[in-house]
Image 1: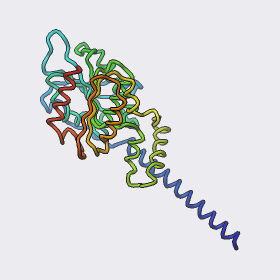
Image 2: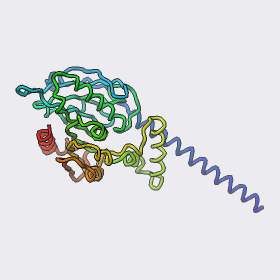
Image 3: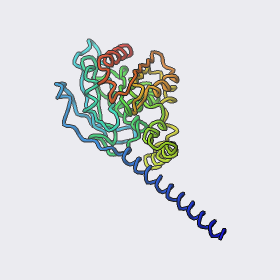
Image 4: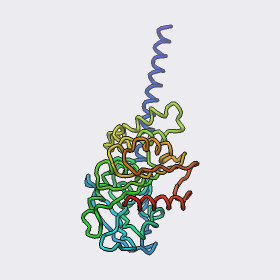
Length: 300
């Protein structure tokens, strides 16, 4: 009888473990798929909506993903030289059309270059990696801009939100051609982003986040251990403006502080605000514009 009870108990434990493992694989794979392939619509909105002249541009990332963007020439021309250029990077699940909302005020002084990241809008369908491979999109945009006769290649900055902020930081660590970074709601490391996907799972949060990271590793060729903006900032001398609200899911003020403490570049600034804003720009519009214009003016 005791032996039979032992066999039954062991079978029940084995079945429970199997159910937990299979359920975890299903949950984490579903999370990977829904996050790596967000649904984004191609907006009919263009810079012409704001009465800006612009040019449609096709270019490739440095790992050969086809990308689509807009080049918007500065309204005011500088005497005897080309204007500085700002590459503007949208957030997760958004497109270049939404990015127009929080960068349009730069148009008077700067050329603007907006594009859809891989897996977003009109660009190539590839897994979204929250900034890791999107940094190659940024580097591709930089290489394209350096071929234009109306761009001052010594004055190119990057302005990103959410995954765009992550990609901006990672790209600036790869090249000295990026002279300024403005990072709104960046994430300090990939594991932080994964953790936010499982806030409701209590003690299972970390294991599920780790397992999702493995799906990204093998199916999106994203190495979570190498996706650490808080470490990457040690490899750039470009000044960085870090902005975040305390409780943003995309990138909290704590993430910004963790990144800031490792910055080596001169002129770097940190601006954090209390509360939780779906959009820091919409919540702090005038102060936001003031800080961005001041920082760009100081460093471009």
